[in-house]
Every structure is written in structure tokens, then in C-alpha cells.
Image (cartoon, rainbow, N blue to C red; front, side, top):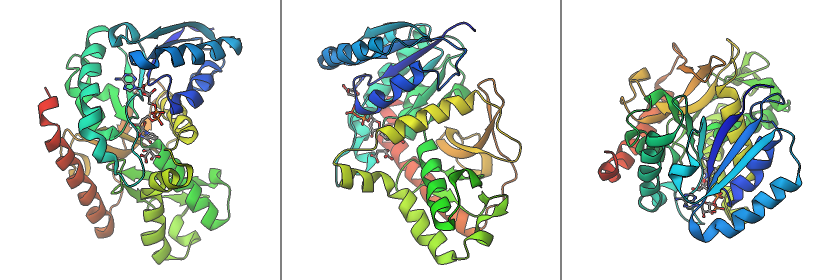
Length: 328
Ligand code: NAD
Ligand code: LMR
């Protein structure tokens, strides 16, 4: 057994966390040899519901769960945290875009960034899930100036998983056949799922799926619109698949990505591929097994891809304008 990982999770009485916390405590994020301490953060009106969730976690008798802290005080909740999953915030409803949540959710991340800065462990890794997650991550990062920028991310892994599933289904292969599925830009209706560089059983996707029209139009719009389609069908936004993506995101941040593959993570742009420096932008990344990532270099982007990437970059620049006052 290694020493326990302190995992702080906000929105702990909410829908995503109801699918997530049990998987973390079962060892799916850090493996069966790593004990975990769950630091569960909510707002005061949800504390009673959180007590109920905690009772259920207790009743699972998870062998790896060393301790559980329940709080509505971010400074207590983030104290010593090695991982911070920022999930708490309003979800959108039918007919809304994720960016419509920006002024309601944005201030949460200014407060939580400050709290992380004050009390989190030096090695904390932050993953923002609450929408609009790229811009919320930007706000968090700006409010935590003592934490290296490379320790912040926003979650676009759900989009990677959705894209892989769509390609696998079209090609009639298992999802594990699909690799190198990059998502570029914003977790929004402008994200660019890059099928040109994705592979199926090691071959370029467009060799296996000989249907450029489907790839350029239906595939991209299905991935971009999947969140809305789920809201229309379920009446509420994705929860179990989002929790699954959060497990994948953190597990793979601390795993060694094979040299011939990559994953999607929204991270601070260093200006790579001409994307405005400083935006939280989804790139294809590889991780080193110790909580560090590198943006994959040398990916070929044709005019079609560059045009899509500019659209999603422009949208992130506009979102940044709207929250200028929160970027201290
Ligand atoms: P939910 O409404 O079921 O739960 C949200 C929880 O957050 C609630 O329990 C609420 O009390 C809590 N909360 C609100 N403000 C808080 C704060 N300041 N501190 C701590 N907790 C707070 O919503 P959900 O379905 O769990 O979704 C949560 C967020 O995740 C939404 O913004 C949603 O849009 C987003 N989301 C993102 C992705 C992604 O891929 N990035 C996927 C699905 C959902
Ligand atoms: C998703 O992609 O399912 C989430 O971001 C929820 C939403 O609002 O679409």
C-alpha cells in the first residue's frame, strides 16, 4: 500500500458525483494499492443530501477509503488536496448553451481558485468539469497564482470517448480499435474532433471509413451536439458518462501514455499550433506517469482543421472577455 491520495470533489451531492465517488473509493482512479481520502465539498443547502451520500459510501465498506471529510467550506475541503475535481456548479437545461452558465458559475471558480491557492498540496492537480469548463478552469488558474499553471486542466475526455464510440460504431469495430482521437478547443458546440489524425487498428480513419461527407459533417456535429442530445433525451445532462470520463482523465494524467497514442485534455495553451497563449484549450497530450503532460508536437493540420480550430479559439477568446473581472 502507498500513502493515501487526498481527493477533493466539489458538487459532491450532485448527479455526476453520485456516479463518481463510489468508483474513486473502489480504486478505479489510482488503482487497488492506493488508499484514498475523500474531501467532499458542497454548498450549505446540499449538506444534508451529502450526509446521505456519505452514509451510502460508508455502507460499501470500501477497503481503500481511509477517511471522508464533508464540508461547505472550500478551505477545509481543499486542505492538503492532491487532486481537486471541480464539478460543483449549475448544469444547463434544454435550449441553453454551456456558455450561458458563465456568469452564474464563473464566480464559484474565483473563490475556489483562491482557496486552492491557500491550502492545497503543492502537487495538487486540478480538473474542472463544471461548465463552461475551459473558461472556469481559466478563472481557477488565474486565482491560484502560486500553483504552477501546468497543474490545471478542464475535462474534454468525455468528448474523446464520445468521438471514439461514434467512429467505432460506424466502422463496426470495438471501441478499443480507435486511437489517437484528439479533441481541439472548447468543450462546446465548436470543439473540433480531429478524425484526420485518428486511427482505427493503426490505420487512418478515412481509409477505414470511406465516407468523407459523414466524417466532416455528421461525425463532427454528433460529437459537438452530444451533450445537448442527452439533455433532450434524459431531461438532464450527462452524469454517469461524465463521471467515467473524470476517472479516465485523472487516471491517465498519472499513467504513461503509449508513444503511439494520445488523449484529449484542455490545458493552458503555450501558443502551440498558433493557439492564443494562455487560453485553456483542448489539445492532444501525452502524460508521463507522474502527473505531467506534454502537448503532442508535429500533428499535421490541414486547412479544414485549421479553420475549425480558429472557430473554437475565437469562442474561447469571447468567453474570456465575459469573465475579465474574474481573472485577477
Ligand atoms: P447537479 O446539479 O446534479 O450537481 C451540481 C452540484 O454542485 C449540486 O449538488 C450543487 O449543490 C453543487 N454546487 C453548486 N455550487 C457549488 C459550490 N460553489 N461548491 C460546491 N458545490 C456546489 O449537476 P451535475 O449534473 O452533477 O453537473 C455538474 C456540472 O458539470 C455542470 O456545470 C455540468 O454542466 C457539468 N458537466 C460537465 C461535463 C464535461 O464533460 N465537462 C459533463 C457533464 C456535466
Ligand atoms: C456534456 O457534454 O454532456 C456536458 O457538458 C453537459 C452539457 O451541458 O452538455
